[in-house]
Image 1 (cartoon, rainbow, N blue to C red):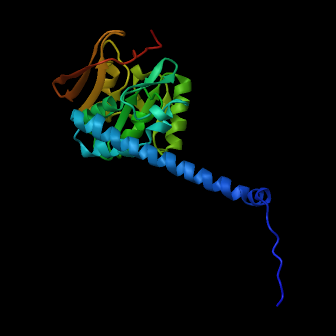
Image 2 (cartoon, rainbow, N blue to C red):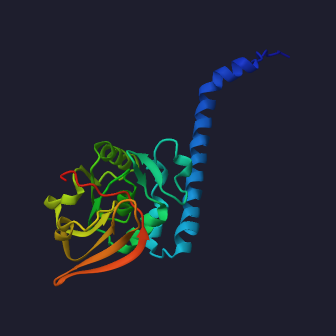
Length: 246
């Protein structure tokens, strides 16, 4: 009988030989683990933060459950992305609390294919939620660095059709008007006339109104042929809407 000699691999040679494979495997498992954690956190956010507080629009809930909010927070805050509070994104700005995003989106009552203007892109999260619902989104951000961040985050998350513009939100986007809805994520002391002018007849503007540092009120304004109807929805506190021309 012929004896066949099989060389014995040391632990060092074995691990070195297969090290690239092990690294790839660990990376894949790590990514899958994080993905599962984020999905679980989104599900909990929907149940505990939104549904329990009365958010009932299934399209809004589905969009909030699909958008990867952790891609829209500042580096180092990913683990807090689905917490029940706003988070800093730099430049004295924040990404709004998930409930407020859902509440404002539900109040806007958009339909698939609607043309929506957002004032105050921030990190891009609100625009992503609107795009996830099938809207054509035009978003304006005053701070150049945040406009770049929003554009980058939206592309990374797969929302490449959102139109991002750096500019003065008080002026709206007249070249693209009229809009089926407008949503504003910073608070002016009074409603900019240009935004009302750029609404379609019968369309809705959702906007927080009030002075900086004080309680503001989220208003739902519907454009009518004989003026506007205004409903105060809830007290809120947003960063001030800045007019660079003043």
